[in-house]
Image (cartoon, rainbow, N blue to C red):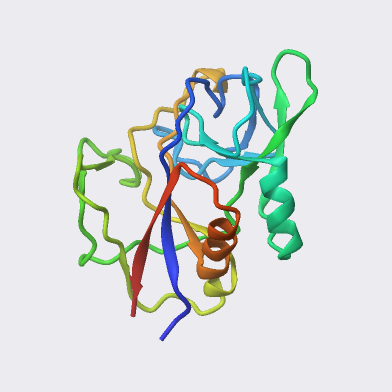
Length: 205
């Protein structure tokens, strides 16, 4: 048996952009030249300042942001998988951090369900995954490298949404991976009694 991991979904979405729109940089060395899958976000990220603070929310580009108060609780548990967030206007460091994956998982198995595929990239076949409304996503993996399971935050190699790589990069739209978090991460989140998220157990053989 492996340690438990959970698909981590934030339901508290705010009407602001993250991603490449405001100047966040990406390493494109391994990115698909068509859809951009494989682009690696480089810290910090740039976005607009929120009118009021929230402990946990997601941007329109699926960046997951944690308040500094919440991040402090995780760091007390020696979980530090966060990068700075900068105001695109004032360049000040904002009072929240963005969640960062520590490693990427291999493709999930054919037993996974609760998603559909639509017009995947003809070059890399990594994007084009979509959620099905009101149908829970059930992820299943086989033979995952045990070293990966030592981390607290992983991401899927499958990208949800449809990407397009453009020049300048600020015109690009990246399909996004899903985040999977360890049981230790989940327990810390539960202990903070924060609202606006759901977790779904991931099956691993």
